[in-house]
Length: 387
Image 1 (spheres, rainbow, N blue to C red):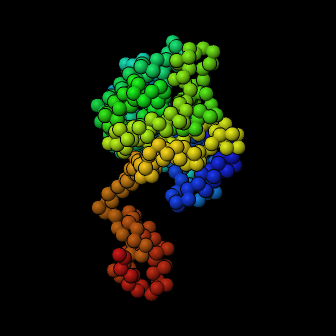
Image 2: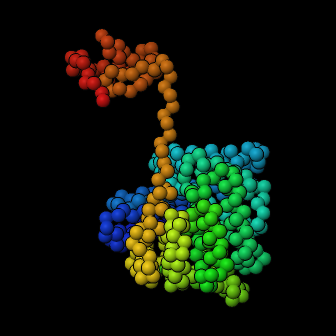
Image 3: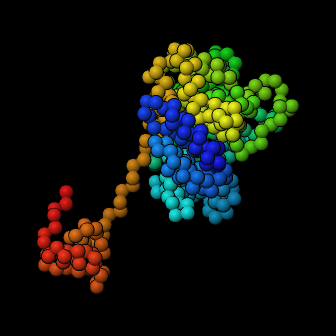
């Protein structure tokens, strides 16, 4: 939703103004390659330049179609998961190059669109690759589930079984449970607080994963909870009333009630709750009648505080938990230098001693003529000791 740079700038500028406490703004941009992530890279960089204090975090992913179309043609399935893991790890650790610019993803965002509860062979390959990349880098893995079904939206019980199967498979493959994030859990906040949806959320918490409520403010501008932008939304005329309700975003009043009661009844899960606004339609922009990026802070925050959520709890679920998830990056260690490398006495760089390309004079060693001339102008005085 950041294709039009000027529109996005005005919306993000408003969010920046709302943050009166001096906190910097963090945008997790989950635009996938199939949706134009790489094409829109320059627009993101220009927004970063224009909006000081606003940080964008992009994501990496692996489309399961690539396993069917590419990997299975060139290598066995048992080797394909290793290829997935190494590719994701390389993008996370060394960045993605586009038009001469290297950007570093801060997370893995996996869109999981399935037909059945049992994982297929290709999905098991993907699970192994995702879990390995996550465990090796410690980057968070965001999981967005959608379901193919004979019914227009499918059975929510079946979707729950899908989520269980994937979470358990990822954990068995070695993924860190706290770094697994189940997105769009607002879908289980329909109905009464004591209903089956709440029991399923507690089940996710007990598994140790993080859960993301990210449909705040969506009900006012859209009747569709589109969790997979690559899919076409279903016509309301095809939906029986009960399934239509599952498709619609839950009202903000109900989400506030659910979150407040959850934090009151089960405060031990505070550090697994993430709260955000997912802006993926232009109708969500303020200029088109929506709440924009600032809606969460301008309107929903007051609902939560009125329900008894403390300012400390609010800050924890809106900011601290997310920052903790994203604070994983440790630069890879530099490869060891060959034993025969020399160190330049002037610039301090190590270099390979190729005959005719380096020089020595007195007790000094020079990597090239530039450092030699520089030291000559200093009359070969002893260089200052480097600390």
